[in-house]
Image (tube, rainbow, N blue to C red; front, top):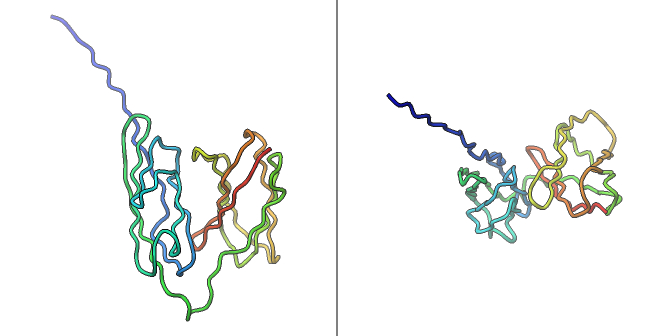
Length: 183
């Protein structure tokens, strides 16, 4: 009798890491990032990029809950989708909630940067740097115990090529975005 062989290769499904549901004051913004350089990212807002900025001034008008959906496709044509809810609320009578001020210098640089960020009770936050394809080129989670008014964090990305990069500093309460240029 004859034997045949069948080889089965498991193809990985894409995995999306999106912010959990969030509440923001009107006028604030949050950057949502797909988390990986997928071949295709389709947001329910119409964008087809790896990240979008969600706010009440440009993308949405006014207060209320907004459901953002993301569908991604990897190189194997496998897809996954996820959604998150952003609730924009009127904070005019509950005290101002603001993102910490941030400076990045020198910018442009040879890949050695200093991030200077206002220490508004920052306990835990992440620093992520992405290239324009959405690939993470730097990631660091920091736990802060300093009482200084400003934190200075050195960042070295000297192993990347020249170009423009996206810096995102975030935690559960804020997200600050800045463009970086490596010469």
